[in-house]
View 1 (cartoon, rainbow, N blue to C red):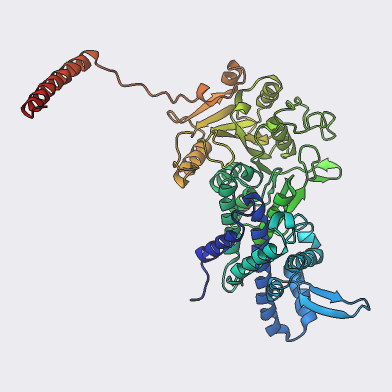
View 2: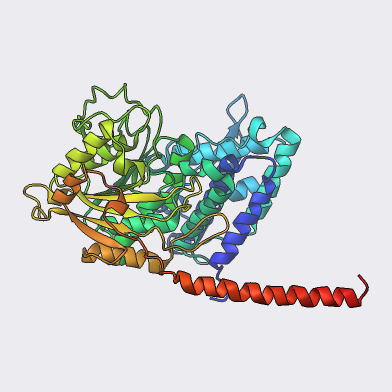
Length: 518
């Protein structure tokens, strides 16, 4: 069709809508307003498109059409206003168009909130709580009534330009725009972006290393806006299967809401995304036990202080039996949780960590030693620095495989692969990036599990024990480049030659200056 809307069209219009808030609202906050409005516009256009389709099939039988829509995707309810006598004074469909038609109303922010509340209430299974942390009538965030209404009207005008009906755009386009906006917000938000964003190339690499397959239950216990889960699901779908289940937990309420909407936009409505603190209040439980997963992936907060060490000393799920991580650094708390929720004898874990996790001693050293002696650690992969908006430090990926346990399919594997990929990246002005070639090399080396000069080394458990269970990558991967041998005598001769030439030049300059009378 000639009137199809491109990815770039949607991206640019959505990003232009952000001008309404720039300089007025912090990017970490205004992302919520933009993303919620994109979500509302999409589900409104989706509803209208399907409604028209089913109307051709069922005629004017509105009830039958609405039941079918609700059964297949979701329900857009009606908003009703009544007078004191209970008489209906106004009634309209809870969608973007109804708000746009009322964009000149004095209580515009309140009307938007009402529409969102009705949509959430009508779709509790998929959207309950998603809009609870967003207030379009907030004076603190959006200004006093006059300024707030002007900004909201501009926002509505921007999104009204988009026709997001499925007949015009694909579901992938909307989902990709959502990811595009989250990436742009991360760039704007700087360090605050770590709450909701992992760079796409890092998410993809992590998912590839964890290798999800058909039938797997996939979990991210610190899921942010859900990008890593979506990358893992995409790998299974690319292999020709939709047989998988997604699970996540996120501590930040606003970010949790983004994850729920992100799942919806990517057609992952059935994903179970819980809101809460994974370490102190794990919510992915069944029969009063932690759920177990085939694949566990995460980019948890680095060296989180005050993560709750004291509160979980008597952890009811016994996740920290190898040792209690230090209260000032939560890295091994997250790692311990991830390993414990991976299925025994088969679960795979891939986690992004700061390099201190590889060599710090004390309680962390004891936990690290225990996991190595249990033969759980499969690979240590060093990445370049400045890949994240939250930190410029280089990071590493740890891969654990519980199939290496006694009774597992890889029980006989008794070594650890070290990869130093820290020097291979595309340099950027504000942030470096991994390109496809870089990721392909890492993944190929990981799968081949063979030494590569100055890049990878396969260490036996005995070697690691000799190094006191220190996993610092330079101890295993020698990247030292021998300096070119210098011929001192030749250098001295060259210096003498240059000094002679310089003396001649100075003499000529002195003669020229004399002739000029200087």
